[in-house]
Image (cartoon, rainbow over all chains, first blue to last red; front, side):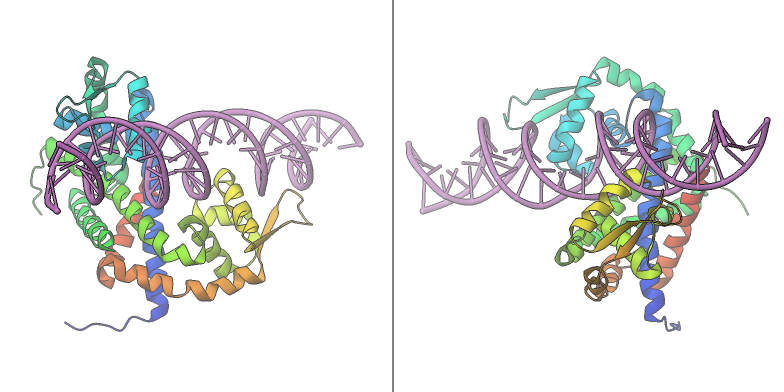
Length: 150
Length: 150
DNA sequence: CACCATTAAGTTGTGCACGATCTAGTTGCA
DNA sequence: TGCAACTAGATCGTGCACAACTTAATGGTG
C-alpha cells in the first residue's frame, strides 16, 4: 500500500472542512428536528432525554447524563422544563438522598406514539443509504472516542 | 446487487445513533477546540470567524454569515465580542449604509501566527487517516445538503 | 417623484452547552 | 466514631444558535 504525499496546505484545509462540516451538519439536523418535533413541543435535546426514558424507563439524572454525555448543568434545567411541561416527574431516591430519579408521567408515556414517525422522517431527510449511515456512524464514533482521550 | 432486508427497528435505532453521534462528535470537537484555543482567547465560533477574515480579508457581516451559515442574530454579538477583544474593527460601508464591513486590526492579524499550529493538533486528535477524513467530509457534506432541502 | 417591498444589521427572548461553584448526602478509613 | 474525600444534583455566568421583530437604507415600479 503506497501512501501518496499529502501537502500541509491540504491537510490543514481538510481539517477545517471536516470540523466545520460537522458543525454545520449538526446544526442542519437541529433545524430539521426542530420542525419534526414542533408538534410534540420538544426541542432536540429534550427529545433525546425522552428517548432515553422511553427506552430504559425511570432512572437517575446521572444515568441519563452518561447516555447523552451531558452534565447536571445542562440536564437540570432541561428536565425542569420537561417537568413543567408535565411529561416527567422527579423524585428524590429513598436509598440515596443525593440521587433524583426521573419518571415519565402518563402524558410523557403517551407522547411516545406521536414521536414514533419522527426517526423515519429524519432518516429520509439525510438522503443517505443504510450502508452510508453505517459508515458515517462508525467514523463519528471513532472520532468522538479519539477526541475524548484528549 | 442484492439488498438485504433491514428491519424497521434497526433503521430507527441506526438513525438515532447517527444523529446522536453527530451531536456528540460536534461537542467533542468543541471541547478539544476550547482547549486548543484557550491561549488565543477565542471560542470555536470566534475562531471560525477569524479564519474567514484571515483567508479572505475584510468583508461585510452578511458574507461572513454565508460562509459560516450563521445569521446576524448570532454574528452581531460574536463580532462585537471580537471587537471588544481588539481583534476586529467594524465600519459602515460608504456605498451601502446598511452594510457593515468587518476588518482585522493589527492584533487580529498578528493572532494568525498563534493560530497556525491549531489545525494540525486537531487533525491529530481525530485519530483518523486522511482517507477516512475525506470520506467523513464527503458524507457530512451530502447530509447537510440534503437536510437543507427540508 | 412617491411609495412599498426588500435587504443588512441589530435586538430580544428562549434554550442548549459547559466551566465553576455550592449544598447536602454518603463513604472510607485512621 | 469522627472527619476528610467523594458524589449527585442544582445554580450561576458566559457564549452560541435561532426565531421573531425592529430600524434604517436601498431599489424598483406605478
